[in-house]
Image 1 (spheres, rainbow, N blue to C red):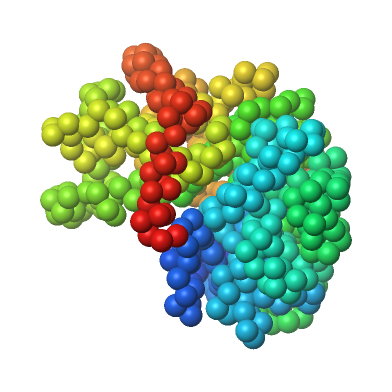
Image 2: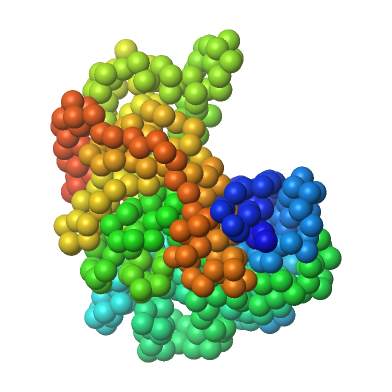
Length: 549
């Protein structure tokens, strides 16, 4: 028997066909979103403001139509041998739809309306609404705020819905259901509307099975008082549960048999834990790509500054699932290569048969720790944890006329490792032990220097995901549980999860130097991030004024 996991990332969707006996990956296929990330303009040409990041839901449907037939064809596996389908998704990436599930951006008259589209996880234009959500919660003494590290993010569900109400009440009135994209694609597969407990808990303020009170929502805006009944209907569904069965219509589009099990939706980071056998307390999994999400399970409920949430059973049943993260990691390296690397390095990389990332990594590896004389802050896309502040920006200190591109590239990698250490220390300060790290995703798969730096900076052994497609594998594991192949996710992880044999250990002499550099990072972190000098925010304000925004 086989299952298929479909991983919806920031720029593409990937299907992975997996043998349920041992997790063997039989075939994979990728579909790049035609609309990609809309952060400058809509397909109509309408310009978007700063900090916007939208997507088109048609791209998600096209992922199913292209990738699933492709993996079936490439594998030679009969569709009738596939017993389940699971998905994972970026989060929080919510969207407005009509009562039948039709996306508002596909309704006549709304194609030119920005608020009618999916607001991607890195949409930060709702910061004013997030600020209000936090301010009102503090004024009212809402106890749930501590479950989110003391601050609700502009990246999350209600910040984005409240932005619609504030900026275009007519569009808000036209929304019948506001729903995470993870749950919407499952709705399209099954015809059944469910809301997964993962995004509900981490992004939608659901704690202990309930939303905040209508009085709280009403304090945000009078028309928001009944937001749950009016816009956020649908039952909660447990992870690993069966959301429904594949409809005839979607069976025709995918080539799979109608009626097979479709698992409850999940978040790309959280679904990865069982794929790397991290179903026990104290193992922090870093899902590293454009950003990094840090997830781990613990036996007790603790309040951790700047965490993205803690949810009972949010990752695996029986444990508290914790989440933290960094808003930019791979995006930072990509920005540097695309916009700040001299052409001579591109020529040198080409001559060496490498891409620019690989060439810079090779050159940076030749350095001793601290040799470049630099330290950077990893806030080029804001700070998710522990400061939860999207208005922060990047910083590089120590540059001279002798500074070269490989120096900066290494310093940027190190800055992201320092950000992870800051997160680990925040957890451990509250008694949530981090025993070991597991890295998953494209970055650690490709970059040996990054792997070693993270081990050295954190002082912890670093294990590596046994699959380059750990998110899709995790979705396939949940599909196996939904289909009844395994009784629970622990059993599925034991048989289908995988780790590489390689373990990266910290080098003591490197650790000693990184301790010094991390101390400098912390000084800058607190100075620029905790209000002593708000120059980053002032600069953004001046920028926006100059642009007329």
